[in-house]
Length: 217
Image 1 (spheres, one colour):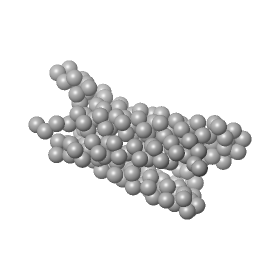
Image 2: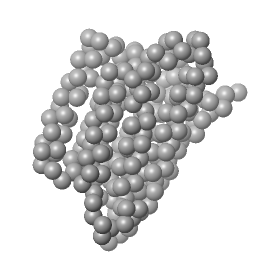
Image 3: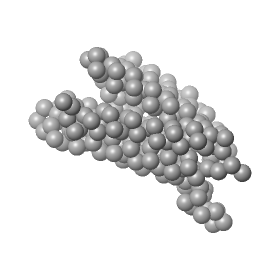
Image 4: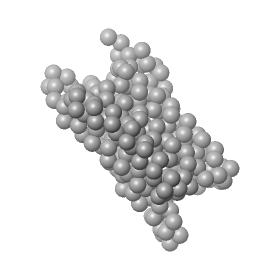
């Protein structure tokens, strides 16, 4: 019988992506272009989780999937923030980063960290870039005429910032926790990935609220 840890991280949290997907499909006609990008990202995330779980069940290393997902995830996030950020300079910078970051990922798994190891260089870098975009969005949202809680983008952006700011340390030290700490202090490794799963669940829930805030004009 699977442990509570495996049930939570391997079943409950991956399946929780159905919450924002369900909310998104009911509000899809009301979703802006930016929110539809996030909706597509959730489908991508769910598919990648499904593939990763299937590979793990067959005892196949699923880390190559994560390397590819890192690139695709960044493209989704960068495209999303190009829609919601107002400054032309920020939009132009994101175009450059949509090209530069994937190149860095390819260089990383070609010469530094193979596809069979966690990408502890590019994953945290992606998190930093997304966090910068998220903070830039909050810096421009000072419209007092609209209640903060009524903005779908505010909920979605909060979910993104919460997840990536919390997970950046896990991304940075994941190779160490897996190859070293898991042999000596198993409970610590379990706790770290429980936290990651909880951050992911929180992001899904905030996305769900954000989608539900959308109404037909």
